[in-house]
Length: 114
Length: 119
Image (cartoon, helix red, strand yellow):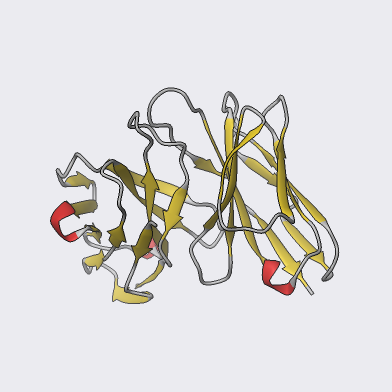
């Protein structure tokens, strides 16, 4: 059973650019959540995808968007990058539909916006 | 709105000391889940425990123990006989549950407590 993987590990972008981060869910999982963790802060919920549909969204602007693919891998896209977008981006996968389901976090992608 | 407060930003102890990490939460939900996660320098969040709002029984797992008190909205975490490997950032988190008692899993995290255990 493979764990949750994320790519790339690190990324440096310039303000105004666009970025795509990727997450590969744990095998068999149908739900993925994305979190943003600024330095020295706790992770903040961005959104969740369940069976390729957005299933809840946190307090993030529309320039944060996502996709979930039939194989349950996922992307987080951020347009018009701002300096405050610099953070560790974590994805977590889980298997919904069987009562409580555990979330498994990936190692994260550290994004630096200059 | 849900909120989790970890009042201790940083704690420093010497190996073998006991240490308690405090967590206070706010929610209007009657059914919810509470969690503790550990985040080592590698960045990955490691799940430690989940508690649902109907189960106030304290739990012990090896050197770890958790004290859940609904009356004070607290879910504190104690490490007994701390070790250097316990050094990490620890997060308390809260998740709402839908009417069916399950949760789609949105987690509200506290700010985290940096624990440093010195040899």
